[in-house]
Length: 392
Image 1: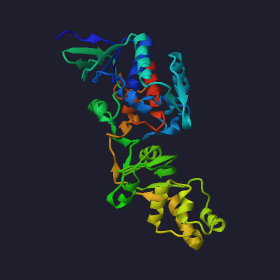
Image 2: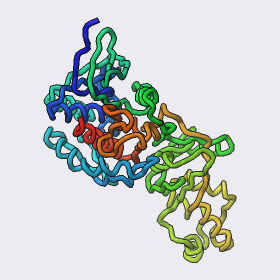
Image 3: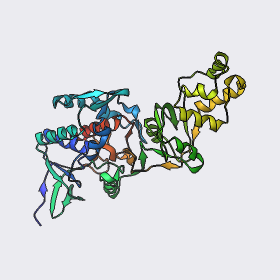
Image 4: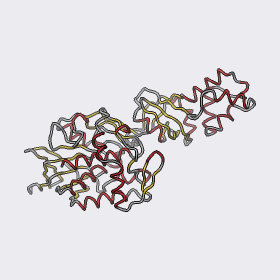
């Protein structure tokens, strides 16, 4: 076998974090090899944001992320802000627009972001090895990576292969497996930003498949005002995806179906329109099918003038604090990201380098840092990649 080719850094995983880290390190004069088992780089980037890539969020900060150590992300995010990535997008002439809640999307295609990252890699002289499965060994103070009959060696290895979400795009446990082999702890991975499923006794709501409404959804310490969508399996939509990251099995998800209504609004409606039906009053505020189903569930109907004030108060409370108890989620197949991963206790928050094995780095979704829906996970990819690249 030919002697190994030598590099300053080998990066495994050509997703958002891996490509950006390779580009930045290469442009700092490092000799970089970027590897991916897929023949196409950036596959999750391409499908993200409905094909338009929600590439960052203008409000991204450490408070928008979940981790066993909520302070870990502060350093990297503080040193590479959304404005820094926006400047790169602008430099490449990629048109973008801001949607609700600070979310930035390409006007055109998410493929523009992949092309930009590959152009930046080319500018840094990064060598690419796509469509090749890698094996990793640590010996003589460096890392040896096998690529079929060839071997590459470097003093630095960056794990950027992401988490377990969307296996059909090639997601594997590679980063966790390598980290475990080198003695790093893993926070148990689970699906995040994922639709939740409802048990059979709540099957009535499955008749509402396709109906959505703006709500406030809560689970654990997470509380989000966005759209919720009923599906044939349970609950989805941005509000549900957000709280899924905070939800734990056996716990309820609470939904306020009428977040703009003040306490006593039904009694006021009774005074103003005593002959109006309850269904008509609630149906003005919610999709008709949803209003009908909720009122069937509370067993209330008829003209509002004939309903006791106490009963109206109870109906208000139910509509403002409706509890669903999911029996699970749609799993990694439908999860946008993975919560958990390589423990932040094992890594330097400044450089993303493993404390117990110098030269080993982990970035992006492989690490136990998970963002909200809306461009936050991409910002973590850029920021963690930048932090590692400055140390390579």
